[in-house]
Image 1 (spheres, rainbow, N blue to C red):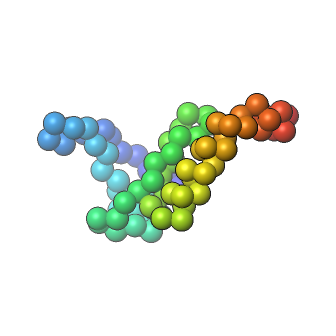
Image 2: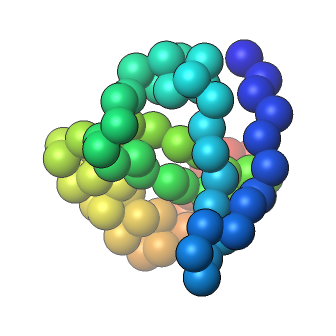
Length: 76
């Protein structure tokens, strides 16, 4: 599932318009929020915004900062 798009000027901002195939893959419609997160490899991930998911990500980010060294050792 690879989709090609460009960064465009929208008003005074820059934006990305997602093709309808990408929106169908994400199962989102106009007006729904998306959650953007950065992967370890530097790429960005888009996911439909979900209240439970957002709470889980905040907990993960907190724990990830606190236990970064231990998690890195476990990942070896």
